[in-house]
Length: 320
Image (cartoon, rainbow, N blue to C red; front, top):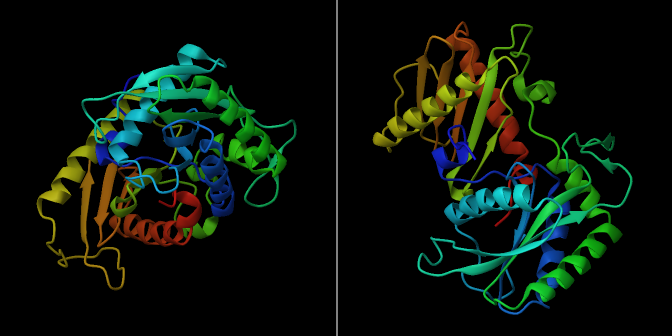
C-alpha cells in the first residue's frame, strides 16, 4: 500500500467510521460478549475497507483498557493487506503491535461480518447503499495471545454476526462504513453558505489529539494524485511548524475565534492550493482551499466547519 497520502501517519491519530453513537456502542458491547468464549483475548475491532475503525472493544478488566493509536494505525494497515490477499476467506495470522509489545507477536483472526439482505437506514432515516465492492459486509478482527484459538475466534465471529444482525446494528454499521465524508454532501450549516458555486474548500482534517483520532474528508474530485500527495506533505510540514511554537498565542491578525481556547492560526498560499491551519487548546483543524480563496472566506469556513464538527463528535469518533 502506498502511504504517501495517508493522513493517519501525518497526525499519528486514526480515523473512525461516522455512525450514530448508539450503534457504535451496541457493536462494542456485542464484541465484549463475543470475546468471552476466546482464550486470552486482547481486543476486537470492526473496520471498513478503507481502514477506518467502526468500533473496538477490550475484554472487561483487561489492561491496558485501550489500544494505542499507533498500534491501531499499524493494525488497520495490516488488516487492509490481509483483506486484499484473503478476500472473503477468514485468516489467523501473527501480528505485532509495537507500542504494546515490540518484541512479541499475537494472533489476529480476520473475517467478514455480513449484514442480512436489505438496506440500512442512514442518519436521516433514509435508505443508504454502499458503493464499495464488499458492500454487504465489514471487516472484523479478534486479537488473541493464544496460537490455538482460531476455532474459538470463528465461533465468536458467528455469534457476533448473528447478534448484530438480530438487533439491526450490523446493517447500519455496514452502510456507514461504505460512506466517506464528502464535502459536497455536508449540510449547509456545516459550511455556512461559504462553499458557494466556486467551491473553495477542497479537503479538511479535524484532529483531536486527546481522542487519538481525526476526521478526514474525501478529496475533491478536481484534485489529481499528485495534488493529493502534495496536500498531505503540506499538512505534514504545517503540522510540524505549528508544533514548533506550541503554547504561543498568535493574536496579531484575524482568525477563528473560539471562546476559552488559546489558539494559533497559519495560512499558506501555494500555486495549486492554500492551507489554513488552526491549533486550539484541544483540537486542530486543517483546510485545503483553492488558491483564489480570500483570507476572510477561509476563516469563515473554518469557524463554521469547526463548530459543526464539534457538535457532531459523538458520531464522528470512537468513544474510548
